[in-house]
Image 1 (tube, helix red, strand yellow):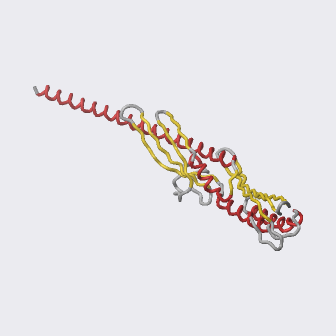
Image 2: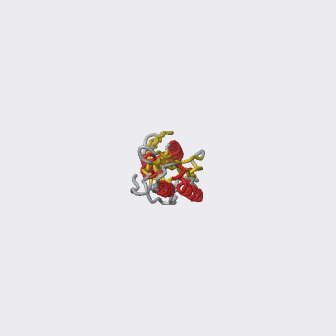
Image 3: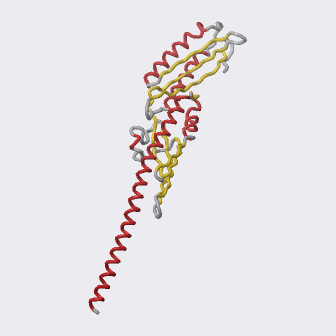
Length: 259
């Protein structure tokens, strides 16, 4: 009788150990699957971030932005970018926005050197949502935001563009009785040379052109183009163009300027 009781107890103990080991195996399997899904998320996160940066580069390189509205135009264009990808049971979607005061440590190191938040450049916030499953009992959900950037100096470019426009417009709109490019261009050409030199010192390429029309009134059309070249993208460099254009009515010495 004692032997039977002891054997039953040992059998129960062995069964408990077996069940516990099976449970541990399930837990280990679930933990491993969860870890694998987390790794898949990191890969998709980097891939989608690269896609957003590539799309932003294409947008910036293919358009010219009016200086007064450049910041809002770029924010609207880049802010409309999104992407979604799936791999191994994990689905990830991302959408972009521009601005904010980012945490310098909150980045995607896989996208270095375009990761992180850099004051004065085009800082992009990537908003991620992920979900997935890998068998019974294994689910994956995650939501987070990261900063990436492109070296587009929007504020500096707009400031330089507007300063150049104002200087040249002032030179071109001085009163004159002789409505010709030769007459109006003396001061304007000097102003252009000064502005081109200043823009170059700040890392921009500036070009300004103008034309004079004598009839029915003396007017001057001008075009200001400022380019930030060599902006580093995901796989290549590109340039961003800012511009301002307009028409001035040139007064005679007895009339005020208009336009």
